[in-house]
Image (cartoon, rainbow, N blue to C red; front, side, top):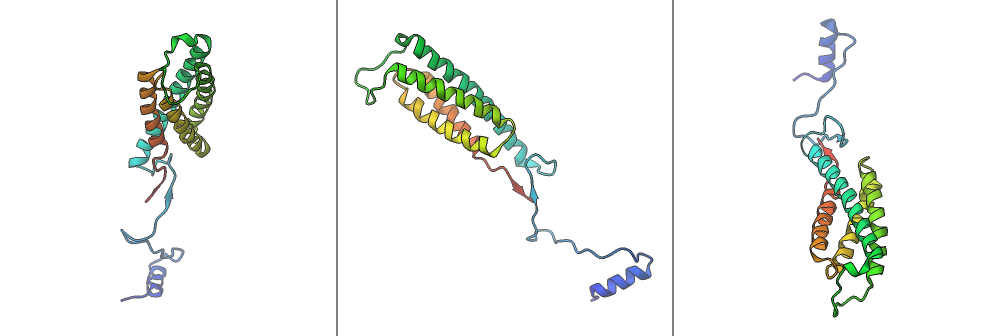
Length: 169
């Protein structure tokens, strides 16, 4: 057994006087380092996570545009939507039109900001997708098939934005 001092003395005798011994952590040790999402060292799951984030951003852009147009249609031609007579929630088509118009605009803007992978955009995206999910759940009697499709897309967006972003190696 030789100590670190002996190893340094041998290194100086061999002509490597300016080199110092730097211990390296053993494999499987507790030494971890943070690897950011976009770096080349991140590997494996982070590329898929970024891909799902970009897909969620694109879904939010398309969902925002479609919600905006749906709200516009409800405001311009409210008779297009059929309402059920004994529905638990009594909200006019015009009210739903304004809700979808405003919510669609904000969802579109948050989706555009997701392309920059900002934390606040992900948090806002989850909140907006949750609000959109509830709004479309209540909108089922007026436009059933499309509401169910948007609910499924909102669930995907929530899942993709809540996926872990960092990896420790």
